[in-house]
Length: 189
Image (cartoon, rainbow, N blue to C red; front, side, top):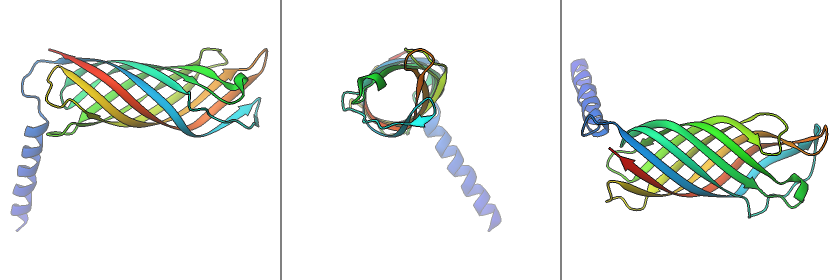
């Protein structure tokens, strides 16, 4: 009975690996761009260590550029994100730049993919370095195309970003953000 479990486990692992393994040995380059809308957040805004009232506006948007190496079901690389966070009080609004490492995995035999990225963040009105991490899912809405993916997705980002608020003063924006993304990836062999 025990050997049946071992044989079953080996067969399941072999079947899974055959689905995940690339069909050819050529490395792929995936270049992509995405637009993002950031309407939701559970975040705090502190001014010099004191929590202040803030109200995120629906105009918070951004874009990202990624370059990945790998296969259809697994790739790694880098991503640069630029986002404009808009708040009701104009002095709290800022532009954020993220330089992230990016890992993407596709679900075999489906148009679904998941990704994880993380790295340093900077507000363009500098106050100091911050950090961010993103977990997202996307679906390819053109699944029959081999060279072009058109992706619609959702993602959550945790960020901690110091923002300059004048001479010797800074806001710190930190917390979770929800975003909707729309992107296009080009695959080169």
